[in-house]
Image 1 (tube, rainbow, N blue to C red):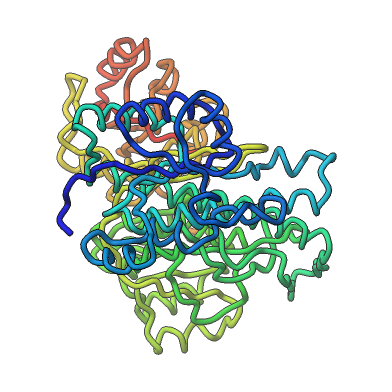
Image 2: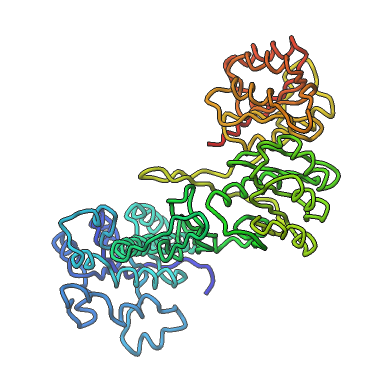
Length: 542
């Protein structure tokens, strides 16, 4: 069948929420459209003087079992599923009339109903609609021949199109309605599934061992989850959550099959992953993916503590470790190149590490790393540029959803001071700007020669973050802050941070701009001979 418009001649209406259905039906009748309806809806329409044919009269089967059986009949489903021009003969043989539009919504099965203590479990079961979802799925599957309407907010749009197009409904509209219908059924089924899983947990609550070595969690988390039409399957139970007394599980998106993610990574050795391991590795991996040249990122408690780019992965690791060896203890290490033997040996020799993740880790490296058998070693494969995505965060009683924070286009950079950054300073500024996106706000990152020289994270005010980033006490090797570039994830509200930057020898600052004191801050930078770059984009990370 071509993508043609559909002439609406017969409409089946069976709605639990009857808001605006009378007005909608009246408009359909005015166009000469035949109405077919279940008992309750038919009563409302006929009481208003509208001609309506009861489904029980059409099927010659009354509604039975206290309304459990209303539309479960071959004449209804064949009328919905029939393909125009293909099934006409069999439909004529069994006196089945085609149904051009199905208007259905279900019994309410919401959290409010479940919370209502006046309903027993048996009474709640009666709110599970059977025929409604079946009709919706049938109509949505056959959207080329049938329009499916599950939301009364669409009534006006549909009527407008039918009236404008002389009784026709476009293929585009039918496809849109089908997509919304499948979503509606999914959300309804999820609500029922959540209720049953809640009952299952109450009836069969399992125990959990809270030791640090071998935590076992059985059947506490469901195998599958659906969120915003994304489906997730449980990859593994975690050793524990953020703390040993918390249970946790790791789910992966079944739709996205990209390599180069923590979700797709393969663990090659080491202890089972904890909840915190996954979060830290995701931060480290997503940060290191920002760079093209060989780069190492070391993360501790969700924040980068040492980042460096060099000509080899071994040199990049040495510089990243040198940036903050104290914080690197017990950290997560990520690489954007395959791990080599020299780097593996250096890691084993000089630090305690929780986990290492890289695109590829060969057997020679594994042989070296197996000396410390508890180290978690993950191989993630190479990656493609990240496409548009969403982030979410659970809050008590709700869910926050936002776009993924993408990097700005370099063409929007604006040098706002009279002092221009050198070519090297500009490179270091962009290096810092890629890192600051992964540091908890308020965030300050300092770097020189593609090596971090100080990171200030998670402070309640920006000047304290600057003080922390510019006052690191190094061990084993002293990194000179002088000549570093500074990045700030948000604008500077006052010029006090610029004074500190000058005292420490910062020669360039990259920041979003946007403060009411921008001009004062620019003037202060000019006074000290500090180049300043505005990005016009903020990178808060909460």
